[in-house]
Amino acid sequence: KNEVEQSPQNLTAQEGEFITINCSYSVGISALHWLQQHPGGGIVSLFMLSSGKKKHGRLIATINIQEKHSSLHITASHPRDSAVYICAALGGGADGLTFGKGTHLIIQP
Amino acid sequence: DVKVTQSSRYLVKRTGEKVFLECVQDMDHENMFWYRQDPGLGLRLIYFSYDVKMKEKGDIPEGYSVSREKKERFSLILESASTNQTSMYLCASSTGGGDYGYTFGSGTRLTVV
Image (cartoon, rainbow over all chains, first blue to last red; front, side, top):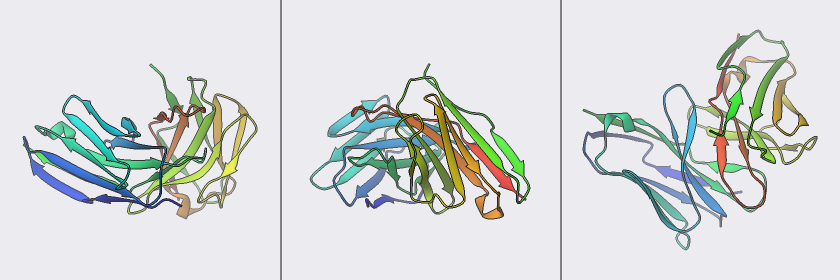
């Protein structure tokens, strides 16, 4: 079974700072998801990666398959980026995602 | 806009009650999933289904059952609710065939008293 580790667990930063959240996993995967969960619970899928790098606005996600590691970066962070960010690894079967425990990000004005 | 809809946002039930959590998706997805989310434990898979009338146990199926009579609907059933089933429940769906894209519902926060 895949083990997915995220770091840091909690991160508080000032508005405008560059944010990096890391995710590592223990066995090979088909894809890795980065998810965002705002207070109130609903989860939004930000990225799905199987290789390389993806960018959407101020968010950038990278994955290194050989090192079994992915990062989520936020440039020019803003208080509205405050949320829990979760990485989730998808193995080869149909049995769903294995989730990291999440990174609780607070961006202060 | 594609959607996974969970029937209740907040639910309070008594110990011993039978509880139904409903999830409906409008994307014609083959795979549907039920997760629970608890502080410090993250999201854990309860059950999943890859076809109508098919179901598979996830990591923590004890105390739960599921039903998938139609492709678009996946129900989670707590046969006799207990206080340790107080949690946030999230439904998700995905396509088969290697697309890997997941869509999540907004969650149901269940409190069992």
